[in-house]
Length: 95
Image 1 (cartoon, rainbow, N blue to C red):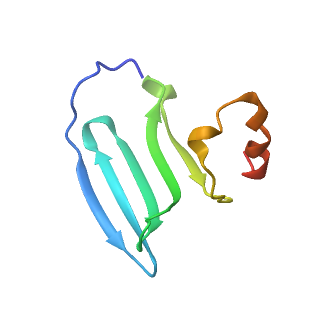
Image 2 (tube, rainbow, N blue to C red):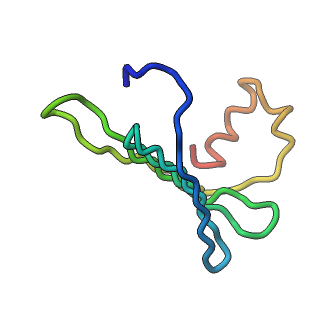
């Protein structure tokens, strides 16, 4: 985004619904917002996220949205799964 890397002020909010909560970080100076939705009960698994930001300059700038959603979960000792032999696990997770 060609912006100087520096500390930014943000407004944080937490909203709670049925079984899930959403934590939102809003950066007004950057016109950027990040929302993370997670299960309200332990272990607070992240279910989805959305990021909105401005891309481009002048008349060509536009608001873009990036999002992700959990498709599958597996319980595994992931710290031991870091070789090319474990690449099949990406397919298992739908990545």
